[in-house]
Length: 165
Image 1: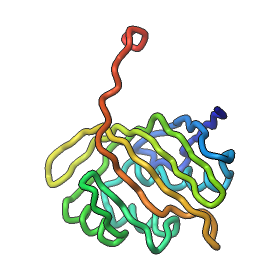
Image 2: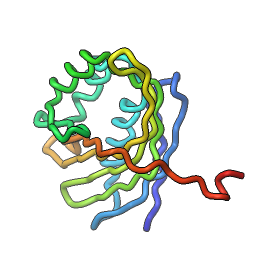
Image 3: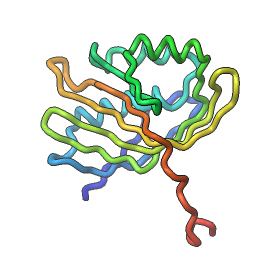
Image 4: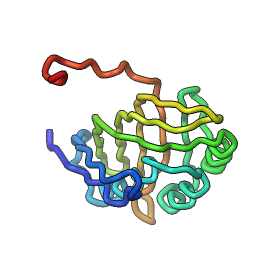
């Protein structure tokens, strides 16, 4: 399996630089334009305190038919997601990605990853470990994000004897 190193260059200074490895899957090697989109898009998911500010920056990177699907299984559109996150006063203070795999196909790319995040939701602090996917498609305007999908929380990674040292 080919390994690609993605350096998230646009992460806000308060988060600090984060690098995470992306393994390659799918029937084609990663398209360089997809990697550029991932480099621009993922930092906006890392840390933010205003859904409106986050989504203003993300809007040029998504298709008009964009949807978000949360763990409840319901799909919600772009404006609905902004409204819900604003209503819930959702703020992501810190988020780290791991186990990223980019599945590249001719006109579709899917980035799967796990993340550890902490922040505020409905006035209460939270921290979580989740599994996610970003679905991208090739459009006449270039590669764009079609969907963000949040899966059920995977089991916490187990520490091995090696990782305890």
